[in-house]
Image 1 (cartoon, rainbow, N blue to C red):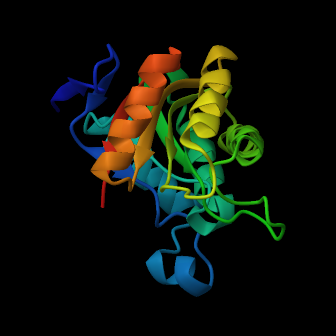
Image 2 (tube, rainbow, N blue to C red):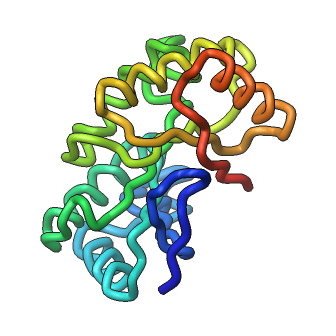
Length: 189
């Protein structure tokens, strides 16, 4: 397996990343995407890790958080040392009934980071990504929330997912000007 640095950092990640969107679905959209249960996920994570993949991606919205829970448990079940795996997860999607249970606001990011850490059974997230552009929340608010979580030690690095080029450039400019945690990656679809 070949490894590369994650953006302009010293963190080495495998060129291949194991996506876990298929973990835990049961009904509706997530059931159609995938329904892997714990034992199947354990086998998949084991095969990926043994092949040299150290980079695993999930998101809080995948199967309503079940993907994160299954991934965290798989890492524990397999006895994979925490410092030998790079876990990426994402935040933005709908995670509850109320109007603030979605988006990239400070409130939603802070609450969902804690929830993701609990589901993953981890003390930090290696790469935390904003899972889309939130036109209702100022970019500054989003970046300051992420910076707070980095400074608290809950996140190591931050990234973006599904943002347009102009949005990325604006966010990088704000982070640089305000000396906030830098944006290291873009996961685009």
